[in-house]
Image (tube, rainbow, N blue to C red; front, side):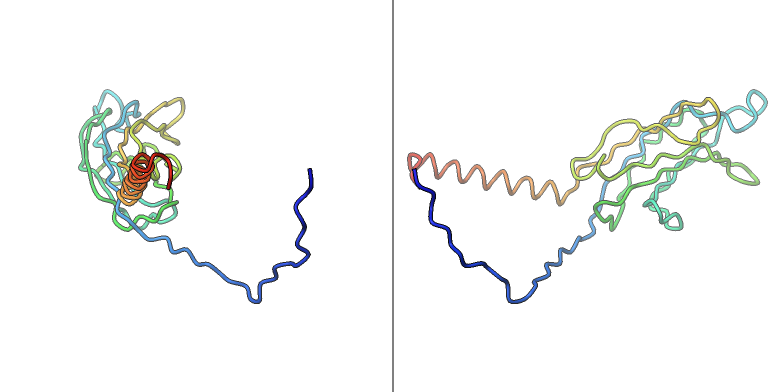
Length: 176
């Protein structure tokens, strides 16, 4: 057995080439389904239930609220509120904050940060635990984030290409 001959010439590029990959924004469909296990911020038995709402923003951009649910009077609110998050850039985490609306100031009930790898590109349907929900409180937020439309289209195109290649292979008896 002989080793193939070695080529002593080296490839040396004449100039460095930079490749710029542009990440384009897309729209995501987010449904804030509901929450459970929230503490009662309205004083317990005397005042009853929270007047809950939830806000969603891209983590690090708290000034721009992308989604806000309507207020619901409940300690286990069910919103089933769906909205489009416009101009989402893949890789950005989403932050959800829950509040109890009061006359003077809204009481903070907890937050959930959802990293992009949890929902992008395949989507997410489940619960996330709220942080800072109060001492000894285990509260959860239920969300549905639909599959990225752009990623779904890429996936569909890849499946069509695979199917076409398989059809050609079958038609030629494996000889291409």
